[in-house]
Image (cartoon, rainbow, N blue to C red):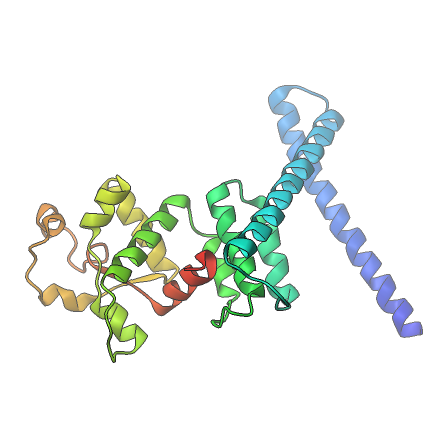
Length: 245
């Protein structure tokens, strides 16, 4: 009994400490904004707190609604899988802060995959780290690489990794379809390489370059990180979990 009382007291102290930290952070931001707009500190803090709570609550409501819609769209019925707090809470937290509907839909899909008993692949906590580092343009490029790879899909005895390495995707079609410039494409690929959703394959350098993209770029990219890329198995699993494809 004494242990339970002690644990409860510790928990209350931690909550109080967190609350004090949050209040102090809000006051610091409030002081900054107060100077900017020349309004009293207390009035600014009140407005900031109300606004942030409203925004988060609004985004949480949208997340819950999209999650339910996605369950219906993907015909996820019956008994749902239990999601561990380690996975559920970070997804809800980051999704509540996401202002872009398109990106929040990916968070909702990730939650749907986590509860879907028919989604056999592991919904990894690493997907949270990947998704929170992506911008809309990164998602568009990754989706385009996926669609290009899917068009190449054929029966093969290769392992998944070997198949993906053989099916290298050129930026030419992606840049055209997405109507973006090369700089935007390369920046997105940089980020996707960093989070290991795509990979560059140095072996293609032995091939004769007839692609119009390569011809227009000359010898600028010696190691060709931006030229031909392929999905990684991690990237493919990430797309599946975050889109249901």
